Length: 262
Image: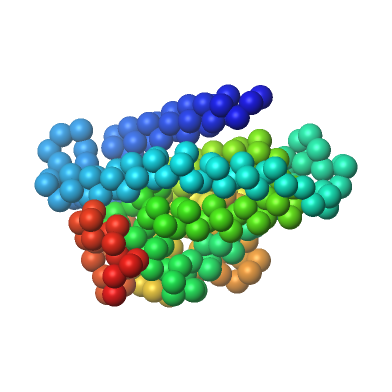
């Protein structure tokens, strides 16, 4: 399958998943928050929030083909010869997904622990409600920095483009799921949480208390946080305040310049 076909498949898969959760969380929200845009009767503040999130996403839609994809294609051309022959087929794909998820755990953690990276990442955390659109809300600077660091992982481990694009699709779908405001049956969510990150885990990461914000870094698999002792003991509750401790969300233009402005 060529690059264009892989990208088309990823777009359709992720786009369909996003539409599904956008609809579901508005029919059966876990938290019926005033900032959630429903089918009718949304407040002006809710619409402003939606503009902020979709605005940041639109910028990244431009950045991805112009910067992120070329960086990935450039990295994929190199080979170090370190990849053993048995890492092929589905075995290789499974290995690549686990390794890339391991990398993104530490990259996410670094975004909280290194002040320069946090200046970009906090734009994502300023959101005062979690729903599927929060999964699309990232500063383009963070997206570019992430692609540059990931390029090193791709080069060192000889990760093929097909694995990278599959991982990107799974990351986006996971982010849509665990940021969503979808109401899930408790037993189903508890079962899923043993393997993957669920809303009950990730909402704590967005709790407007820095001790909880600096925890629960997992993206796809839920076992990295217990393994590296970064899982918060806080349990999600319906009125949990979301955002950055001591901070408030801000207009789109201010979010764009926030990392560059003290």
